[in-house]
Length: 207
Length: 122
Image (cartoon, rainbow over all chains, first blue to last red; front, side, top):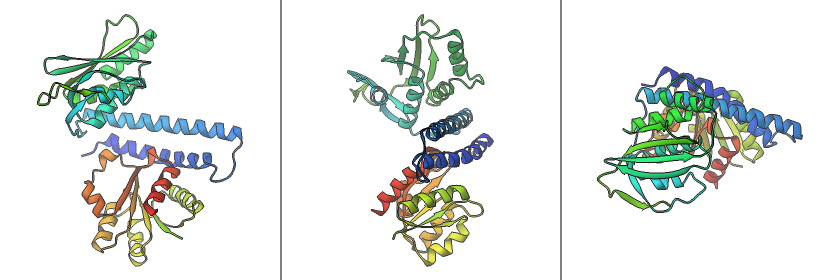
């Protein structure tokens, strides 16, 4: 059964979808030519619509994940290939295979990478678990770091909702997502996911 | 001129899509409920249907199944506010019911849907 929050999210996003479509049509000049000022305002409205839709969808995702309402289609996935698809740089070498839902794994990685600038990614195997470290060297303010910790702890904060969703998704896979409290500079996230033991421990090189 | 039927209860959204498709050279009709759309679709089959899932009264899936039961084969583009995760329809069933596209309203623009329509009618 779907949660009340999910239904509410749908009710809230429905008029936003209509507003978004209207703005998109105006920007496409389907209803007449725009001047620069009109275009600028409409682009801003479109961004606000997308921001609100993203926020509402994230809250809905959190509710569904917290209530165990998200279905996972688990299969062996090459974590290097999954990360490489989201990064502007090439990942070389062999990467572990993990047990994950490919679409949700992409969401976890994307939400983590969205919080980092020019991140370095590496993986190691500890027992039955793959530990993926995503790290950047950008100095963060104390408040920023506190918000990240709160989001990962599941506190009600609007900041870093993506990280909270990533943590819940990792846990739904039997893994975890943590912020390294000892990283002196920058930000270090550790994503733990179960290894695909029935497959070879190392998959193909990341594509 | 190819004819498209839009079944959508959001009147503003339906009107916008009508404008978009008419500008692209299609003839467009709108129905706001599945019950009202069914006899029209049965009597005079369009080239394509844009179908919302959640409608007042009978829903879009009911309409799809009724069309299928009446041996009506018309390409259908689903346009809904249900996230794909909430709307699981096996690929085989989608194909058998004539579903050629699925769009979540919050993730697309009328131009995106027009592209799907053009591909389906090419």
